[in-house]
Image 1 (cartoon, helix red, strand yellow):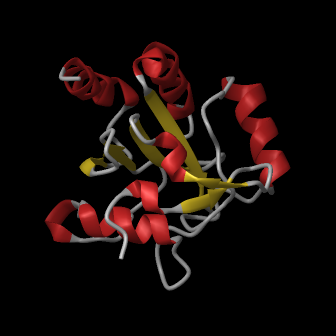
Image 2 (spheres, rainbow, N blue to C red; image 1 turned 180 degrees about the horizontal axis):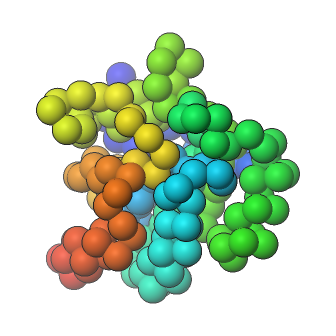
Length: 163
């Protein structure tokens, strides 16, 4: 039974499996992303957050997902190119996964169980749902797609300031 985000593995866009224990001691923002969504411009704000706080042991982990309106149709190479060319994304990006349903990635099953959404639902409602995870791997907050990276940055400043 998993007790932290650090208990999971996930494949990077390159296909290489990564142990999330590599992020112990870092505050994380885990986001399900998509290239053809109305919220896709949030990549720009996410990259700014990453640039601003990375030196303070902060990481963003992007997980492409095609479950919402088929808005992430590309393969891993296409996703990597899109993110780099259009938004200059340098934060870690992982292979496309499901976040809901019986094929949901185990990490997302854990995240949803730890921090439920509006009205106590576990399901991810759309792309760009975000989970804030502390340095010990505990899920401390959940943000909806409409919650901008700028809003999260204000909350992040408080968390990182407590370190």
